[in-house]
Length: 456
Image (cartoon, rainbow, N blue to C red; front, side):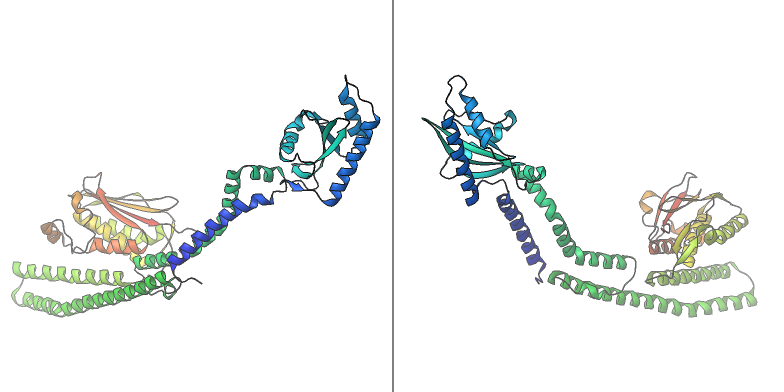
C-alpha cells in the first residue's frame, strides 16, 4: 500500500496510461479476421479440390468464344456444399464472384497470392481461403474458396477494429469506472476534511480522529486540523469564561449603584441627575444581559433542535410586537403572516432572532413597520421594513457586528446596546440561514432573514 499521496497519484497515472496503450496496441491482435495459415486438413481439402477442378477442365474442351463457361461448370461442380469456388485468371479476371463481393475478393487476393502458402481470412460472415494453383493446359489459374465463417464477429467489433479512434474511445469508456473509483478513493480524505471544516464553520468545535488516517499528506493535515480545533475550542472557552466573569463582576457594583440610587430617591426625591444615573444603570444592565446572551449563543456548538411550524413559533412574537407598537403610537402591519411551514431548529434562538429584529425596527421607526413572511421550496424569507432614518450602504455590512453603531447619539437616545443584530446574525447562522440589510420602500431600513425549510 502506497502511503504517499504524490506517489499514489503518480503510480495510478502511469498504470492507467500503460493499460490504455496496451489495450489499444494488443486488442487488434485478437481480431479474428487476421489472415492466418491453413490447418493441415484445410490444406488437404484444398489440394483435393484443386485436383478435381484440373481434371474437370482437362475433360472439358476449350471454347475460345465462351471460354469462361467451362470454368463456371468446373467450379460449380466441385464446390463443397454451402461453399463457392472462385478462379482468378493470369489477367486478374475473377470467375464466380458476385458484384458485391469484389472488394472482399480483391482485398484477399492482394494479401494472399502465393499458392505454396495458402491462407485464410474472415470478412464478417464469410471466410476466404486460398490460393491453390490450377493448371489448364498452358493457362494457370488461382483457385479460392469462399465459405461461411465458423464464428463471425459482430459488426460493432469489426467497426471498432477497423477504426482505431473508436477503439480508443471504447477503451477509455471501459476504464472510466476504474478511474472514477480511484479518483473517489483519492478524494475521500479531502471530503472528510471538508465535512470537518463545515462542522467548525457551524460552530461545532470537536475533533475528528478519522482525519488522522490515509495518505501521509492528509494524515499530517488531519493532525494539524485537530490541533487547530483544540486551540480554537480553548480560545472560545477562555473568551466565554472571561465575558461571563466580567459580566458577573459588573453586576455587583451595578446592583449596589441601583440600590444607592433607590436610597437617594427616597431621601432626596426625584432629580435630573438621579434620573440620568438610573437610566444609565438600566442601560448598562441591558447591555450585560445582551452580552451574556450573545456569548452563550456563540459558544454553543450544537443547539437542541426540533421540528417547528412557523406560524406557531412566531405567533407570540408578532402579538407582543403589535401590542408594543400600539403603546408607542406606531403601526405594525403584517402584510403576509407565516403559514404552517416546517423547519428544524431551536425555538428559543429563532424566537429571539425575530424578536430582536422587530424590536430594532420598533426602536428606530417613525410611525410604520411592515412585517412579511414568504416561502418557496427551499426556505422561509422574513422581511421587516421601517420608515426610520435607515442605514447608509457602507454601514449595512457592519451593523451585525457586536457594539457597532452607525449613530452613537441615536443609539443612546433609543436605548440600544449594539448587540441585538449580532444576536440575530449568530442565531441565523446556527440554522444555516442568511440575514442582510437593504433600503426599505418605506424609506428606512429593510432587514431580510432567510431560513431553510425542513426537507423530507
